[in-house]
Structure formats: C-alpha cells, structure tokens
Length: 338
Image (cartoon, rainbow, N blue to C red):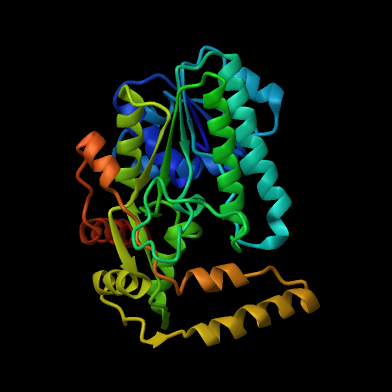
C-alpha cells in the first residue's frame, strides 16, 4: 500500500492518477471533501473512466497534525509520498506554516519510523535551497543555505521540513527529497501556477526580468516515482527543466493564448515602494499581504538551477517548457469552454 499526503493538490492529484494507472494500491489523505472534486477533475484530463479509477483510491480524511487519524492512515502502508504543504509568503502565516510544514512533516517522519516504512519521498522546493556565495552562478544540491539571509517564511518552513526528513534518515529511514522549481500544469486555475496562466490569459501588463527554474508537473511526478522504484536513497534532487526570466515565461504563455504580451517592466524601486504600500494597507486596513519585502526582492533576482544530478542518476529527459506550456494552455482553454 502506498500513502500519498496532499492528494487533492497539484502534485498529489497528478501523482495519484499515475500510481493508480500503473496498478498500485493507493491510499490518499485529504483535508475536506469539497477538495476531492479538484483531484477528480485532474483525472478527467487523462481518462474517460474517471469514477472507475478514482474509486480505487482509499481516501482518508486527516490533517498533518491529527496523530490518531494519521496513525490509521499508515496501516499496512509500505511507501509514502509526502506532498502536502501550506504555501504562503505572508509573514502573518509564519506560525501556521510552521505547524503544517515543519511539525506536520515531523509527524509523517515519526510515523514512517514507527511503521518501518520502506521509503519516503518528500516534495520540498527550490525555495529550501540556498543561493550560495555571492560569486556562485549555478545553484545545485550542494549549495549552502545561510540562515542569516532574509528568507521568506515559506522557504524557512520548507527548509525546516527538510531538516525533519534528514533527522529521520539519521534514525534509519530511507528517503529521497525532490526540490522542484516553479511547477506548472493543469487542474488548479484559481491557485498556484494555474492562477498565473489565468491572469496572463486575461491580460497581464507587468513583468520582471528575474530568473528562476520552471518544471512541468508530469516530469515532477514521473521522477518521484522513478526515485521511489530505484535503489537510490538519502539523496535530494533539483527538478528544473529550464531557467527562464519571468518575462520569457509569461511571453511564452501569452503567445500560446494569442493574447497581448506583458509590456510594462516593474523596476526594483517600484517593487520596493509597492511592498511598503502593501504593508501599510495591511497595517491600517488589515488586508491580507500580497507582496512582501522578500518576495519583491526574489522576483527581480537571477537564480539559475542545475538539473545535472537527476539527469545523470536517472537518465531523465525533461520536457521543454514550450511543450509543457502548450499542453497546459490547451487544458486551460478546454476547461474554459466546458
């Protein structure tokens, strides 16, 4: 039995389909029944037999900090994919992020140890990898994380979650950690990367030239499954297809949609002013933060990530971002017309 946490999220839902399709016996954790429809919808991209395949999953309602429910979910489980996480860059969510991402991961690790789980795959993020020394041009799996840097709250808690996984490894757990870049794929158009496709389709005016790593959801789940089926253990892997500036990525998406390209560059000075105004709006009107100091800084910086290790160890060939963007845009338009 394979257990998947975060089964109704972007990574979890696509992973579940592939696992069931390959005949694995699967149990998945979800937080609320209304989120099951999102996972069901992802299945509809790949098959006309949605209910037949979806019904093969043993769904368990549980939170990452609900030990009794998690204990039941671990019954007869041999392998675990830990995909569940809270994503937020709002400093006001810091303690909630710690509770879910760090404490929740610690609970999963402890239960893996208690149940003699064969292998754990933890879905981390490139946010949990440091930027290294000032002269480092390429970020890889060995790049140092410097805690004194001004990291965003999401990155801090994903790094803390990784520490829990490595603690489990020291206690005898076999594990692999994947650090995907900006994951994009179909199914969640109101959140995460899906909301960006939606904004570009409606007409996104602004862009920055900051560079980061991008990767297709299909590549992410395929690599996760290959790692779990391999003899590889206690390693981490950066999952990035290409390093692109945000302008390049947004332009590719806009061209696929045949809509107006982003045409106004946002400067560093404008972003510095914007995050301060956003903070003031939060302070006075109690509005939720949309742009933080750390986020404003990161989206103008150039961070180039190496995918050399995973290519050498697995022989994987990543999809080009052009192909991935084309497929995601087609699914978006399909949903728009449905």
